Length: 528
Image (tube, rainbow, N blue to C red; front, top):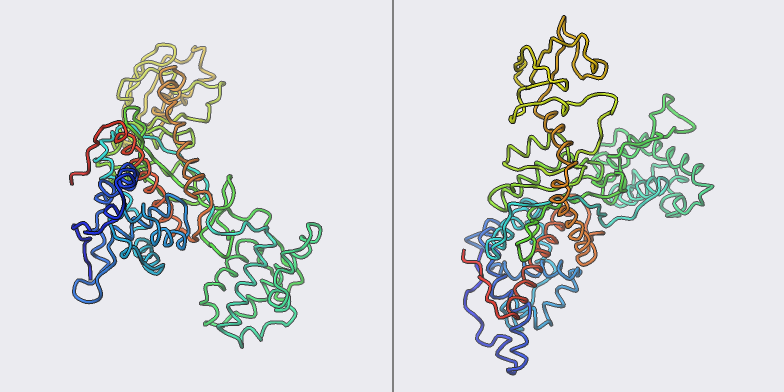
């Protein structure tokens, strides 16, 4: 049964059990600011759908459980450490507005809350809703923001190629021995001895022995797949599907029915299996793991900056595809997309610049790749302000005619006086009968204009603010455990990232409130 937190303060709260000096110190701490202005930011109504309205015991107060999850990420604690702090830490009791007798919950409650958040929207709703209230309460401006990605690793061991084969096979055989012992006994005894009785035998091989043992491991995978073929019960096991995926990713299917060796793919796909413990992990230029996309405000007038969007994508996925999702999330968090979004060159493209404009955002991203100096670029042509008509070519000649293509997605302009043009050999126009034709679209215009703009001192000066998000990435990794998480699989990784980002926002807000209070300034609270 769903129950909101009681609005009534405890009669014998922590503050009433202390002398005046300690009570004064308590009221100047972060705990006081969190109790007064942090707790109201958590919208308990969002959790009502998870509980039965008619039957069952009333839920543990949502604000208490959610706050414990946030405090856990603020100090990068384990569940056990967080629960111990809840039991004995007076600051936590005061911050959560509970008595020491009420300061208890179990690990199962934390687990169930995370499961609900993962199954709902991976914590996006909690992050966006609470951050929106925080931004409103703190009076933060969101018209200027910046975005960047950072590499993280879930709770896995980084395996060599041989280690990947050994760990995947061992994990399957251990599960098979428990769930289908007869099928396990049907496998060759020598094979079972290598991976069950002498676990880690292959994985501990010296570097010089690895190639030979890798070939044996590949042959063992093929032997297992052939022996299990037709056994429907085993083929439905998740650990078996990983063995099958491993073979498809790493090996070349043999032509012979009983091959003596299995050829290995020289360059497996970046989306291939990297760890049987977390099949969602992929491989990118930064290594095995995931990429976290963060967007935060970067308005100099703000007393502090807040993360407005946090999401997770594969390590093998390009940043080029992450601009629009970030803008959509900032719209949900802030009510509208920012007027400016500063990113590095990894996000810069004509398509992203055009798509960002559809959200009302000017994407301030340098275009990394330079065009060949042997050819003229579209930027050498003079276009109108809208970028859909050519006024003159680089020599000053106007087109004889122009207009959109049949699809309407591109524009064509024809030039006539090109026979004796000194730039003819390097001109981007194409011969079209007696004329020469220039074809372009909004994306190529955006790229040409950005290349010209990014060379100006005004752009460089305004774009300097982008680098500030690197400090946010570092803070999350150093202080909040973002570098290597305690969870596995992408949905749980995404939830952990959003909880850490929300904890960072809350920490910054509490720090700001403490600083203003010490200066004798009363900051406004959330009025929603």
